[in-house]
Length: 283
Image (cartoon, rainbow, N blue to C red):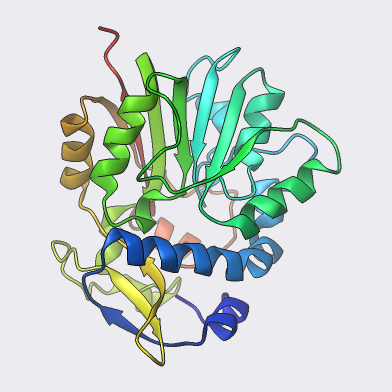
């Protein structure tokens, strides 16, 4: 990750280096909560406009390639549907869903991100209930939602993503849909660089050892977990869900913007995002 893009968080947490090491759910969750609390201000300074965070109605942008739910309709009909957004951050997606007839609930691990969402809602537009909790243990009853979604939230940052899939399947009603976007697994093999240095494969695709940033004492300050395309499909199927589509967005001609490792240069050559569309069988 670029130090400039996350200088405030790195300074607050005392990040000094990186490691490739196994890390369990509790330590991973602790690191992620601290990271997103620390990075919330600078993250929004960089990305709030693109994500529509301060738009009165929010926006539902699936990925750095700019795919919008209003155009894609990956969730299908949202009118009157109870919708769980996992890893909602400051909840622009949930607010957009609420403004278009949905009944969303936003869930995120980070209080700092949720407070940014509350501040945005205080300026008008749809309001949605927000819940602070982790994705591996959803604090909701069985079959309590019609739809679930996540736009780059939670999934890459949890140690046990298979458990998240089971939890989503549990809270979905029969016939419900679960759609989530993540870094395309192919990106794992390349350096986190939007320029030409990011075009050279350097890390084995099949090495699932997490990427971890640490402080001077070796305490994790940031964690990201890798799963292959096959891993993701197997996790969904094992949870009793049916995979309907895997969307790999092209880089759009109109978008001349870098977002971290995403850039027009890299986007013309290989995908940066994978969107998994799945459903819980109706019976």
